[in-house]
Image (cartoon, rainbow, N blue to C red; front, side, top):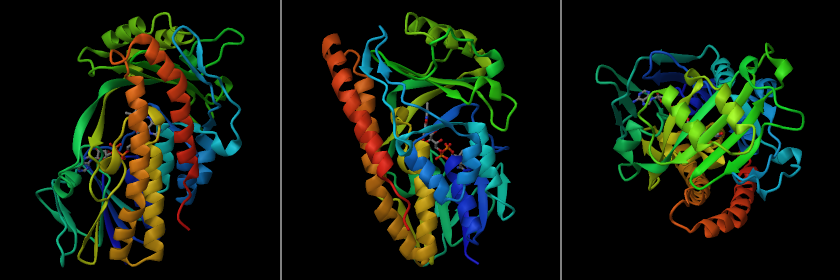
Length: 395
Ligand SMILES: Cc1cc2nc3c(=O)[nH]c(=O)nc-3n(C[C@H](O)[C@H](O)[C@H](O)COP(=O)(O)OP(=O)(O)OC[C@H]3O[C@@H](n4cnc5c(N)ncnc54)[C@H](O)[C@@H]3O)c2cc1C
């Protein structure tokens, strides 16, 4: 039986560990935290991410927890439309999912055959020609035919194998929250949640997770919002961060103020946005009978403005699983690198362009910035949506 060690039990690690186990591999999943725990936020999955989850055999679970996300358009803080809402064909429509529901589906997908070890921090990786790949936490060394580095943006495995890829700040911070239905504001008739508002260096996006009446069903419902602001993460406690957000977004179109008012400081998840520059020179490193591959944020952490990080992680997992089914091991490692690097590079380039437009504050005069938002944003969003929609799992 072929064996794999997957390092990191985030979205990327859980999805690839389950896929390999379902293909008959003996999988050990190592996680440094004491518990495998998702963030209490949500994630938008574009058609490529949904297709990848289906290819991984997780489509049925997804249907029960996903809410379609119609195009709500893009506005300026004064309410002027930069991009009008459009009717999207079903195959272009993203969905939004509570991360805890997604996490439950991924855990269910592990089945009985994955050995999950928590509280294990991998310190080193061995990937030498002629030797079986292995990882070590300084106390024990675990060998396998394949090592999958899914250990996130700060990946130690990537630092050792691809030291040229550096983690840098993208120059902005993000705040996210899910307001459960019982605390969510009742909106006046005609006012909806959804869509995006773009200001100079600031952005606010919101989405409904299911319908208000659906609370208590199989999925966790509520209103998800994400706000990004140019600058560093804030050191103040969540209550002060929330007060700052209310100040920054004061006067923005409804229901942004109502959503911030209904948010409890305990709901708030703050994060500095970081990315890899340059990307690793390789995603696959043949070693001995198999090798090491980089997957998820460990391979291609990018600004989140296109909502593609998790989607690409699912693409990575589906691609790796398919290649391992059809090729011998060292060849599959090389093929994974060949297939995934150009794909990730394209999506990262688009995410960076979007990030540059969103942070145009100060670099362009106000009018030029608005013109850029009005013309560039729709083009970028369309190009990104088209690139995302194009992806098909390898047959
Ligand atoms: C504000 C924001 C909004 C986003 N919105 C979207 C969206 O709408 N759609 C989308 O597709 N993407 C989105 N993303 C991106 C997405 O969240 C990430 O790309 C995705 O979660 C990365 O998953 P991962 O498993 O690769 O990494 P992580 O989630 O970072 O998981 C890595 C795991 O490895 C473990 N680990 C780390 N080091 C070690 C070690 N040495 N030994 C053992 N274990 C280790 C960690 O504890 C962690 O559990 C967003 C990101 C942000 C910041």
